[in-house]
Length: 51
Image (cartoon, rainbow, N blue to C red; front, side, top):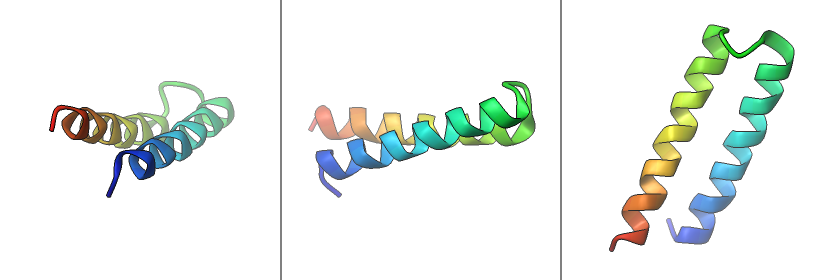
């Protein structure tokens, strides 16, 4: 997966996060799980940048 693919997926995950937060509130388990998914993509992006 290249850097642009990762950025696209990060944006998609961010949109999902905001939608869930708007619907259920920031402390809902679904929002927290989605936040962790986004974190994983952010970490992958950082790993790609450092290569």
